[in-house]
Length: 367
Image (cartoon, rainbow, N blue to C red):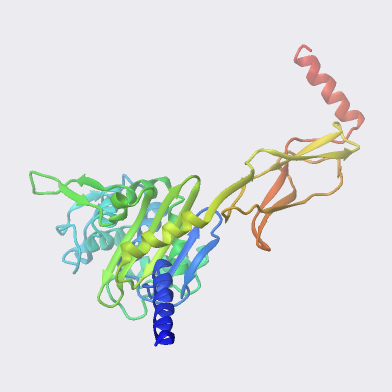
């Protein structure tokens, strides 16, 4: 009897720990936004339908290929689209910015169709653009057949691919502003009052630091959620697909992410890492400067290793901004991030002509 009880307790413990990591989802992943480092995954590469989280790519393409002030008219394809809607009338015109609010807050399928027609000309061409853009981002198992995510045979992605798409979109300030907006009003032709849009992402009000991103649901896909949050310089993006307790699972995954990971910056962009001797130059040294932040998420209470790849010296003729080496931050035997090191200034060859130029420059400056 004791063995049976112990076995049941052990199984319950495993079940609890699995749920705490978000394994109530069919597929899940958590990444750090800047480096893309995977902090947690569960069946992250399984191809699944993704419902309205599709609209992240729709919004990304719209922002990359249009202007928020563009006039977007709802054509026949955008009128009467099933599912969630902002009730566009055929021929109704809104700005692209307002269409995107309808797309991302109210999850308007009609707004998705209108945007697709405006950017791609046809739904089919826009979906081809969506799939091609996903491949450019690094998605290996994503096919878009609709701009809104309504069921279509072969329309699928993975949690990992969707995290990459969200990461790319969250680099755009306008996208971040829209998906973090809880409530908005946009015009409504033929009415004396505006459309009132309420964001379907409950995390924006329930989870401290939440900044997006998008919900989705169909019977085929189940409950799908792409979510993002920021705390203490750590920016996390997560995905759960086919997850009955989507918001609770997202909170559990984020809690574990913030509990077990921290952002460590060893050098900031523009900071001098070393000074290198210059042979035969107009100056004896050149600064090796970090081209970006040498920063990455590492385990709490751990300290990463740093490797610097630079020559012992440089020949004269180096130009400011030239890549002269690299700095890598390592954690757990993995090179988490590698940042180019560039010359902080130009150092010319020390020739008669270069000396004469310096003399003339000093003379013209009145020195």
